[in-house]
Length: 322
Ligand SMILES: Nc1nc2c(c(=O)[nH]1)N[C@H]1C(S)=C(S)[C@@H](COP(=O)(O)O)O[C@H]1N2
Ligand SMILES: [Mo]
View 1 (tube, helix red, strand yellow):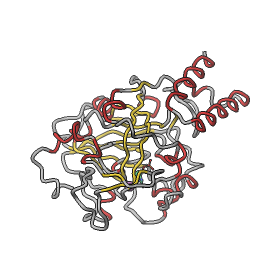
View 2 (view 1 turned 30 degrees about the vertical axis):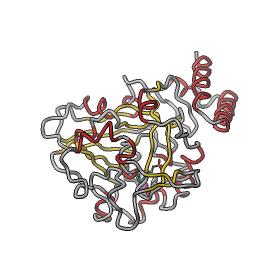
View 3 (view 1 turned 90 degrees about the horizontal axis):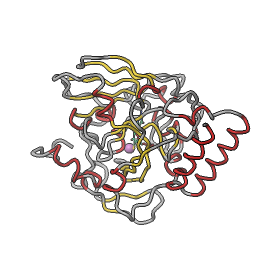
View 4 (view 1 turned 180 degrees about the vertical axis):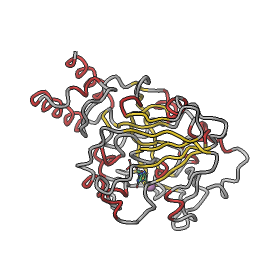
């Protein structure tokens, strides 16, 4: 049975994965077979083991892949996606998270969900993905610093998870927090942001079908530097809204405070929708550099997802609500 699972995930992996990654995965599986580690994880979404290169089995591809992606928009490599990161809990340099998050052990993991809801509680990482099928969502990822990537996330719709806690009519916003742990996240000893890292969405943004909780990429569990074991992905917003290593979700009536807004409110607003027409105080947002490409691309309104999300902001002055 395990062998069958592994073959199935090998096949689906080879369809979406550049050859080097595929070879790495094969090497991993070989090592796993020899040493007996990692095999239990082949039967995901129940996750008894966690290693950086553990493949999920049975990941479904969804319509978003085809609908939102122009054909000439190739995936970034696994190497790019996992070596050029922002994760200040592990240092402020782009290469720091890959190096400093190596020893982070994400599991066991629990998220506390509370605030304006009928059924507050905790949810473990294993329960998070049940009973939903894991989906592959190929999304554009645009940082406020004007670089971008295309990433094949593995995730589940955020709406489906939030609904389980039965948010009440007072739930106008959803607040998110990252783990606070000076031992496990040594970057928090530097007061570069107000820890823990905080983010927020309006309720309708959180419930939008594009919003996902991502638990992996390239068919494998989330690498530590990308926000293991679970992070937010809202592809029409700047990357910093994609809060990593989430331990708390709270429904509330007030607009949540966010770490970047607290750090520099002129530069980072609550909405943070990708908008080429609203210039960041220190640089233009009209173009972006796709990691791995030489020439700049034009930045698209809502990062190319306007058809799906522009309606959420109808009638709002997007210069004021940036
Ligand atoms: N907890 C936490 N989440 C975070 C950050 C961070 O420093 N800490 N950085 C944000 C920023 S600025 C970006 S651009 C994205 C980067 O995600 P990636 O490294 O997976 O590309 O993560 C976001 N989520
Ligand atoms: Mo960012």
